[in-house]
Image 1 (cartoon, helix red, strand yellow):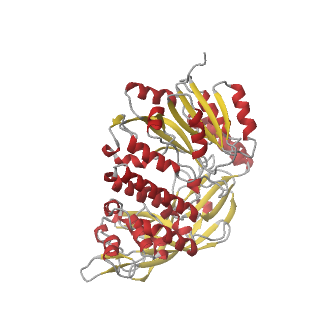
Image 2 (cartoon, rainbow, N blue to C red):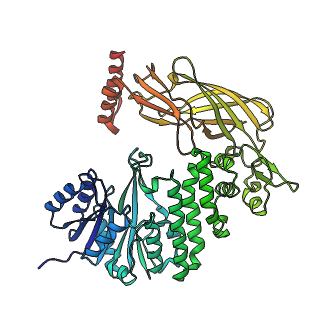
Length: 558
């Protein structure tokens, strides 16, 4: 007699023969072994079919399902697998991700403790470019609890992943709940429907999904969520939001609309906002045409819950002040000031050099409560921009820097500023002078000599972004330093005298995020071949003897 599995896990795959074995291996390692694994192939054209069949031949728990034609999304392969799934509980895995070893055990135990419609846990996010690990939406999964309907915790709309959950099959069938086919961002609609239809669900703080993030993957191979450079991506996201809105009404959950709107503004729109500085005029115009009708439909209460800096960007987009929206989007989350402000007859301060024309704009662009002219100096808001990057002799870089002080916090006259850079544990300080150009604007030139950077003896491999520090008596203000979004990349090979041997240093625009000046160190020669491997082997136990050995190597090879 064939044993009925406790859980069916569907692995969807398309042209991912390289990573599919890793995903399936994570399922075969599960501490709860009575599972069914369905590899659902969206008609791959690479070696995926051969790889999948070999995996199925190795483990009788694995079934290989191949769609007759490519669907272009995640929904169809998941739904076809649901049609043949035999277990009373269901999970989903993407071929480029993994499940932690106890994921099935933990989620299934939560189901057996109490009858709920689904269980969900924490998601580990792993950056493939840096290896750094973080928890997705950690505040939502920090506490173990059973939630009696989404109205009790509408903030859970932020956790819209279908892959972090184990669903009761009867719940999905009773509600005819399947993944919507023919659209992107299907997880958002499916999860919103599941939240609203579930009478109760259990949250556990344990990690149950391992999500690999490749944010700077080539555009042609990037995941749907990382294709924000396409206006079709924007249209798809707005389309799904409207489908969710319609479902909230028809299902009787209109009361949670404001929470869902807030999630869209804080998460979905916020991702596009960070990209605005890097988009051209044509894209910006198309973006505004797509999003502005929908932004006008959202709850005023959702806007009111946002930080002021995000509300400013939103309103500038809605007002079609798109070049200014680009300026406002740089430094989001870092307290970067506007270049200039305007003041009305009542003394209220607004973002930008002209007064807003509508009541709505005045409400959203009002910076009066930000205290640009009164907050403590260490938290005062300035805007520091590199306006020119020039290569100097050797490994030096000359920077022309302009500082905007819209709150007029700095006294009239020249200011002493310092560039701070720390490729190792010790900081490199480069002082320079900022001279007044006009009230609230200063400019100066900094000469950055990269041969003076105090690198660790075992070298340094990584990127750093200089920051700018101002002083007022004993008080210091350290702020983000923005760079031109494009300038020719500069490279230099440096033989450091006070420590490590040669490195190649690259000076380049960051090309993402706020668009800072980026310096990248790469060890070369003996630094990479001898000293760094020696330090890595020694690890945390490295003491005086290891450091002495490294110094000896340095002295010999000079």
